[in-house]
Image (cartoon, helix red, strand yellow):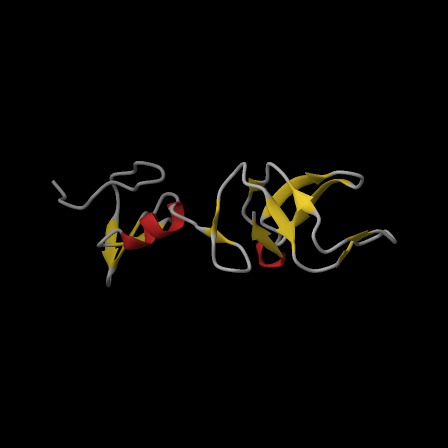
Length: 113
């Protein structure tokens, strides 16, 4: 019997060691022996322009005029956005702005209220 752990993604028992990593041949998932990379992926933290931690449901204020792609509209400085939702990707805030509608913002252009 092998003393290697099962794959955390597909639960395969056919894992093997490759240097400082474990590898699953069935789903190609790799993780470190100490497990630090798995915890870092799960504990993603979003921060605003001032370094405050953002959470789902927070209210934020826009700190820079933002042009809306494909439109002549602009989101003005000081626009308050309520009830944000954090997502993965280039634009990491999903929200609705009064008078404009649904859109995505980058966390670097907002500050927490």
